[in-house]
Image (cartoon, rainbow, N blue to C red):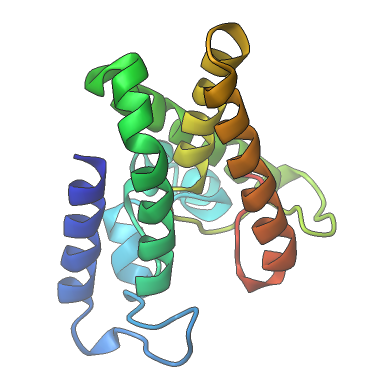
Length: 179
């Protein structure tokens, strides 16, 4: 459901972007136009605090900024999704995905508006993607593993190490590490 919804919304943002779709580099290959992402519900300090679009903390986790972005995020969802659904059930998994996104994007929006930028850690003026919801899933998987399954805990720890390394190494490429 999550992968299908994210892929469908990505396709819709591309279609709505028309000729404004960007193809000027690997990180922005098939990137929807920024105004289109704004209309669809991109979050961050600008949409939340400048335009009072508080609901965007709920929608941003379903939107993506490029082909590579949606592919990598959905890879992580695919890696953890079956285990999460098996452990918690499909409804709770989607609830955790959504709540993780809301919390992550609220934090990122707040940091973008009120906190100074730090190396590899700065809030976003404008942000989309499934990183915040994926970290919500990782947190739930880690919690489950901490109390019930050492295998789930090891999987969560492995994913966190990979994601943190990726975030630090690619932090200057527009990755929203606060989310």
